[in-house]
Length: 493
Image 1 (cartoon, helix red, strand yellow):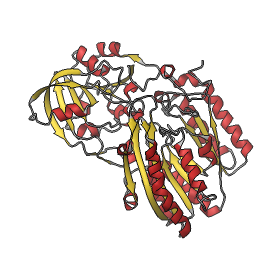
Image 2 (cartoon, rainbow, N blue to C red):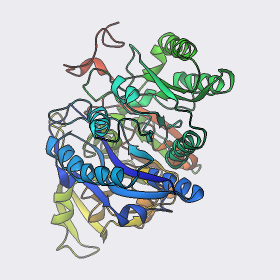
Image 3 (tube, rainbow, N blue to C red):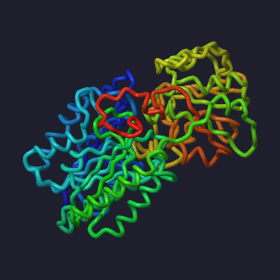
Image 4 (cartoon, helix red, strand yellow):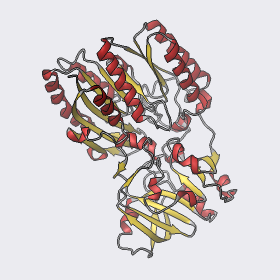
């Protein structure tokens, strides 16, 4: 019997917002609950599927899964380590063969810039784990550090943005572990951190620089002897750490010289195409003023500066204000506003209320917009995803209970879905579960960068990425980096 220990630590930390993330910002699966995630479409499910295929005995410890929020209180990381450390020691005593980690890779705590690297260091420092194979999976928007490469055998990143391959990437990583266990060949990892940082809007893999890099990576996997995986990491621009940004990793059973030469070729592509990673953004007022309704599907007004999936509050008001300014009919927006939802609890369905909506989570937003609204519906916010491959499924599975109590209100031609907690707009079931048919809307505000594309763009007649204020700005020169390596593009032209 092959014994493999499973642990997970996932968080994408925005270092430029005031929010702090405590233990209540994480969904935690322990022991049997971790094994019960088989079939939910997540990273963990991908690993468990391979484990079952090869007859491994899985030792489930804990998986801490957080979204994209502010700096994580360091006590959360220590609590996680306190949970898994004794289980690791016990598993080693019972005969442990390998370790598999389900990671995000862009976590930052109040005391530590590279908790993923620190986790690996602590595992390696555990007696008996010095030479155990360590494999795992991490997000394309991770911060790939030298420590992560040096202390593990095979960490595999997503290849797609939008992230429709979370499950598949975990499968690839677990199959590499199986290859290692069966052949006895221990691959080595070589990483390179470039001098380029791109905002999330520049990291989509279906076109532009990231597409060119992914094409080159897949070619290298076929042509370079010994190479078993090439990782293209778009990085997370809002992680104020030394190694944030675009980076590359090669997992190889071959020679170091070939691997490092390949890394330099990838680096050259990123540098030559560096300006393509800073995408154009339209003027919001111009787009909405010139909007003409059509029957081919809604027009998307994409607002990456308030990208919930990147750590923004999801309640910035500029797009909503534009819809109101031009009195657009059949418009829809989602706003995170727990206070507004709570204020509606005593209002009957069909009743009216005057509410200050949005503008509470970002100090530079113009502030709440007070509207007279009709209450259309209320719910507990729980729903099943339509897209089992959506990014949110890769984190938490297909049944979501994180949106919190929700309400739908209407003001003139504007429908507003109010949620109590942040949920990235990665699945249209978020609308449908609240009684709204998104295809019937003429224009929609979308608080995302790239992750919405796989589900929203198929129903859309057009899409405009607009420039607004918010903590996930595409203009990285506006951010007060303190720890990022320098010089780096675009901060140092």
